Length: 221
Image 1 (spheres, helix red, strand yellow):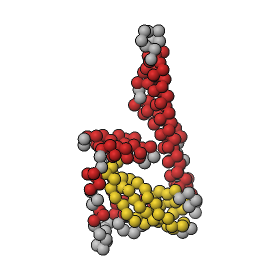
Image 2: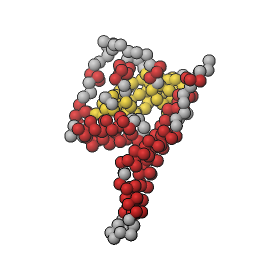
Image 3: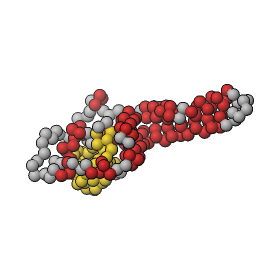
Image 4: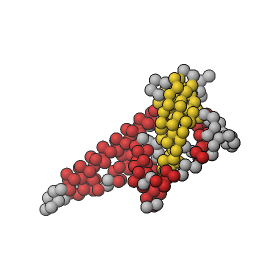
């Protein structure tokens, strides 16, 4: 049975991937356009010869960074779209996980080691860092987590929509992994900020989530 049109995944928008990031970079590097405009307006003033080339340089840098981040963002969105469109269902067995000390919108970023397997999918192990919603945390302890996978490239993503609810943990499972709090105290703010920057480049967090988490980390200094 084919999906109804409204249920089919929508391809990512190129404009939405690039325009917000480029505009944000211009906002962060606003001095570039300001120097550029001032250099064009007062190019005959003594001592103002540096404004135009500096403004051009900063503006080009803003644009280049925006395009680079936008390209990474678009590729990540295309990966998710392709998996939703033609990815095969599989299962991910959680072999181990630990906290990274980074939170995004109150949700923890975990370092995971998984074993992915399924019909027509050769089992393989993978390590990845993923943001796990609080309501999905019990799935790390019981059963297996549904994923979508491209068998050719081994690209994968969690398929949370296919995951059933878990209301309680089996008594036979050890409770120790549930509280790996030590890494949170040992990581420096610089390491956590670098981790957050990497998440933004890989489009694993939105700009709002990035700004909120960055402000929270800085506030702890």
